[in-house]
Length: 339
Image (cartoon, rainbow, N blue to C red; front, side, top):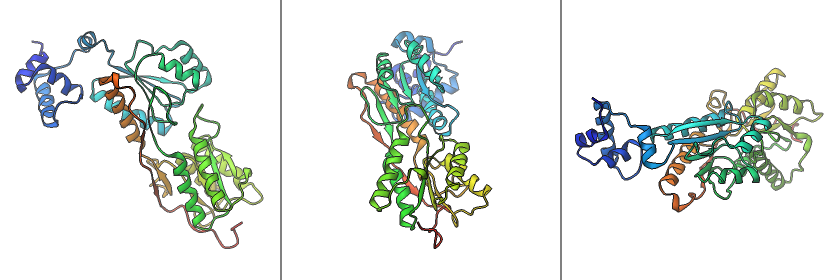
């Protein structure tokens, strides 16, 4: 015999609507009652009818997620944490991986997501036309990259401030020739490289250090790119005594290049990253930690809250905390190497 939501309601002594809210992760149900309802549903073998819920609410119970590079650690971590929140609330995820200009143009021209999702989590920064296309969907929109923009709820961090803390640490150690490995060319339309570069330049200016464009190298936000960029910096007539990498993956590539050139870290060259990648502690990398998974969870939570209260409009931007993490890859420069 098929178990209905009414059977679960009778078993727990609450209304069918309360059972529905509890099983879909909606507010208005205490955690104790939610646990009782979930346990009763599991014991009775109750499974919610997605088609019935859709017919009753007019929703698809699907969230669209748009990413530029699903294989990159940052985007994969945000996606994984957000998906868990959506799944707990009874929503599926429809993923679009737009890793090339062609795929991106095709997506925003055809908008295959239209009428297929209840909300969109965008992990790329749309230009003006792309943002207008997403707003035309008429669904809640959220992102975890870039600054505030009309029609979106934004969860992010202070990229500029984080970069400042990393570079200021190197200056305070006595370094004067500080290189930077950035990701200026990728991902598409990403403002993070610009914000972190500005933080780097601000600290140099405060310390009276003249910026040198030769000390900036593009690492493309990959380990391989970081290794290539560090190799370029080491080839300079006066290489840097310290390097700020705009991501931990690029910093790990820099460490690999330094090891290949038989240079010691931090005795010969200091390295600071950004992100607190899951492997950063393993390699002892000094870095700026950002709560990547928490950003995905918060963005998902805000989207679901917006779906429950559409008349209120997008929730205000949320800035997540960052912190500087001191490990083993930084030290004062050798005497005679301060230039």
